[in-house]
Length: 340
Ligand code: MRU
Image (cartoon, rainbow, N blue to C red; front, side, top):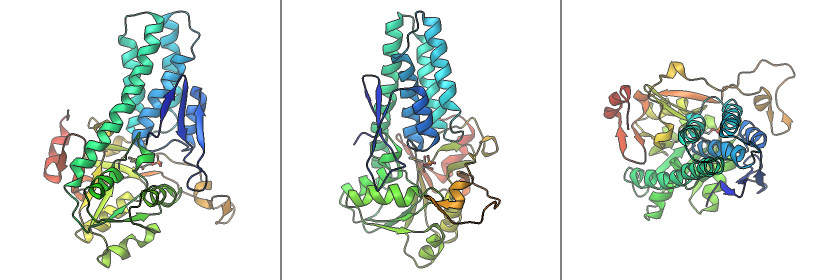
């Protein structure tokens, strides 16, 4: 199912903050609404952020009243800047904006042609992501055996992408091949993407899923209940994989227990010009930690840390599955040089 659609100047996408209790559809018509949806995680997950970013610039083009190409280009640049400053970590957000803006800058036709090309480019990003996730699923499915139990963290599913999912795409592909697999989903505090979104998606699709709290991962591994770990990513740099907070702990635990740790992500998530030390880790508001939903669970005025992501050094990663191939740990030395 398509998670994001363009319909005559409106972007249609589910409000992920309402799931699993309510299925609410957002109809986004302005750059400001798109920015708000990204900031609040109504729209979330790295590949979906890439597509949403492209459509955000397309909204500015579609609704523009500019009379010259210069004015239109400057409005598109402004839209890109507004969207870029909503979340700093997932590289796909920046990649999506830059791809559409670069296309716009290269166009020599009329004002109307420029608008059409911007919208087309945003649509291409979405279509390509849908196809890439199926390729990731197929490439990754060779790593999954009949009977495996896979542990996943956060939500790298259909909801985090345009279609099908990355880590959950691999799981879907293996399940589709008739492999009788099971999934253990970490709940993923503080925002519970595992409990709310991964559990929802897999249960809906009839793939066996068991929910655990994050601090149970070591116990289930020590009991031999996990064969493989598979997660998505927000940014892959020369020396590490950036993903939802808690991924690093799961990777270290997997290493200690001799369990393969796989990352599934499209090439749009690769940022091999940078190192872990260059990455800005988003720090979110304290209330996400001191509350669960509207329920306060900590004393008033307590000091809080709330980093939304962490970085797993590549030594803990067994393989990275992308749309063109599987990179095994021995291949990661090449990440110091640009990959096409
Ligand atoms: O803060 P979120 O929910 O946007 O974080 C999402 C994740 O960390 C995902 O694991 C990642 O984006 C990969 S999604 C295919």
